Image 1 (cartoon, helix red, strand yellow):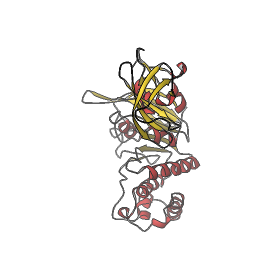
Image 2 (cartoon, rainbow, N blue to C red; image 1 turned 30 degrees about the vertical axis):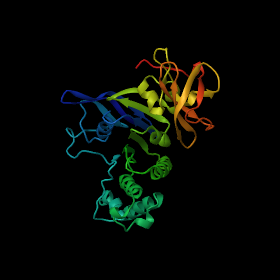
Image 3 (cartoon, rainbow, N blue to C red; image 1 turned 180 degrees about the vertical axis):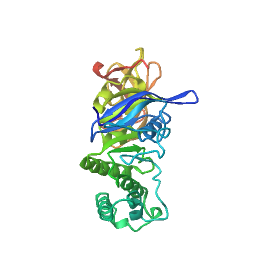
Image 4 (cartoon, helix red, strand yellow; image 1 turned 60 degrees about the vertical axis):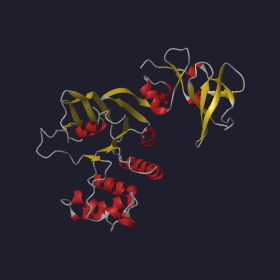
Length: 319
């Protein structure tokens, strides 16, 4: 039996289907990311998993304990399952230390003090424990929200796009710190996001959700190299439609630039990115515009180029 499971979960609002028979089985300490566009049902799924929203059908289990929804339980939610939102939800008028202490008010005093201090240490918040939330950066506020959720040592942590308000530097740092902490604690994690890069910084185990339905799941290598649809393929990068070939695409990174060959084009735009220049190349035959990576930064706007690719890199995608 899996440690935490969502079994055949469906959710319908006014005849509109938000989730279609979603099933997920997780072992203790396992981390998984659910990636999908806005409106794909990610947040609804987490609220159902936490026992905060009633599903239309299906069941949620933590070990041998059935997780009851608000229609079945007087006070919704469980200490064993904590949901962290993107908007922090801190108490604005009390300090960082007092925010972390809120879930522990009914606990033994010695345990409460030890637990608060441990979380302050683990999340690097000692220097800020007397500050109010408004005196902290976005990343620091999110750390407090995480510490508050972890205060009662939950078995399962549900992350609802908690890094979306942070800048890129804060986000990368916090995800890596959180990953190390959660692995140390052995916490089971479901992380939902629309940003695949964020997901892969936390875990290599990914479920792709589209319009409430699982369209593919696996590790990043399998999903990137063997996507089942254009939607999944485009989560990893742009794809270029190959002229005169039905439903056949090639990624910008899988194209080689040469000074002679078969597919002729002209560079019409170039953008300097961290690891390569991103080119827009207008093909001579048909006028299609391809995105092409130029890792040696050789080509400039106006240059004539020939495009090559290996057949094994071609993606045949029917939807």
